[in-house]
Image (cartoon, rainbow, N blue to C red; front, top):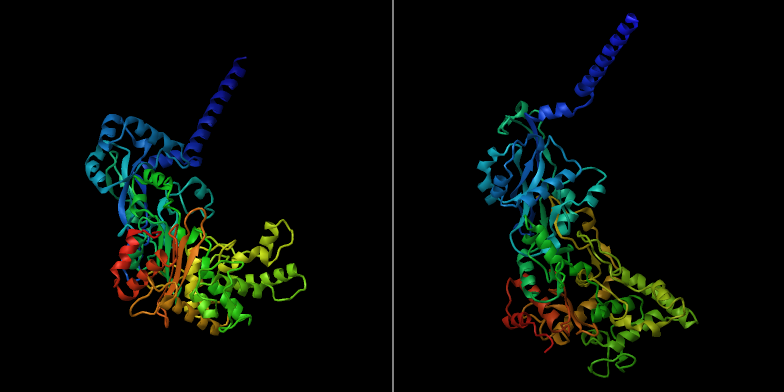
Length: 604
């Protein structure tokens, strides 16, 4: 009995010893938590955030730069006897705000007791100067240096975009695991499109700290540190002075201005109105400002040059002319009476040849032109005949970059709409349709939709006599780089170059003696343009104008849309000619036109 009791006691002792040895092995060898905690008492890993790339205008003027901001971090394992009241007074927050911030970081994925966690974001330099001498009294708290974006001018917000903290959804889509929670990322505009080039690469610095949290130098002379790599700078295509002037002209109006250099596709100015000051979406007040801006009924975050889809109006008549010329259906001497049926027209005489019809924007002329294009007698059935003709017409119009995205280096570009046979089949529930059902598209009304960028690009196509480079906002990735490869590809339309001479001549005549003569004509520069007045029932019409200048060797092509502003010859033609004047001369020589635009009384 005693013998068996001895063995039982020995077995218990051995079992307990094995249990303790196993636990000790687990703690010291298998589980790194305690080793990490011990190491973290003296070695701290500090993320070194890279400087985000800068953005310049085409002339080397700085547009977007970085300014320092500071995040307050907390390492919970190191916090000792925190005087919460004193802490809150120092950082000018309430106890409830402190508790909410602390609880929120504990709920986040990646929270650690032994590594720094961001508690208060985006302290300014003024905030840091006020608190840094007192941080030694709060063990476990430290400062993490980062940067935020700043802007040299309060313009171009919609195109530049903004940067903010990555969302949980975006983080889940990051299959390369580049981003961590709390990282900042481009959310719109150039900042989003060129995120990979701008963001750089983060580094890690390992530092030694004593028990009071005071930094004592680098760990092993930086042997294990990795340097942050700054993002690449971008040289944009924008002329910032022209951009400022465009935003000045569009103040208190809804609409857009797009100006392009025809020979390269480089965007000189891209104005969306109304807009906002980009500096509002930086710093600690980002959330408050974003909420206010996004709830504004005037939609300042809506990038009209890319996203607003309008009917093109009478500027579409130039495309109709070019298609018909290339198909051999008309020539410059083709005469068509202005009979006011089935389309009305302002009186300009009994009829016109092609140049006169464009100059005076004759609706019946282009009703008949498109009818001849679409109903060419390819079939004895008028319904089938229209289908065959519209397929060919649709292909022509698509070659001008309409009905599809041009591929600008900005997100959220819309495609507009060029109606097809499939579109009308759906619209008429597969019942028969023919030209008499769709003829309003002949003059840019009806189902046609374009975005302003497409119409500026169309003006560039005519200026180039038949081709374009995709519009883009960055001419160099890196200080001495190039644009992305797709922006160096030349795109040709289906229309032969010789037919564009007639379009150029007609657009010059529009400004010389036609609908654009009163506000688009410049003294020493031959401007080629076309007015458009776009139906917008029950509100006033939209005012539209496209132009390029000079006539020979053009340097600038422009489209202007001013919502609810009436005739294209008034608001839009005035703004377009002022933009051309500003870019080519450097100032306006017509203060009366500038004053007319600033007053904004376009309907009177």
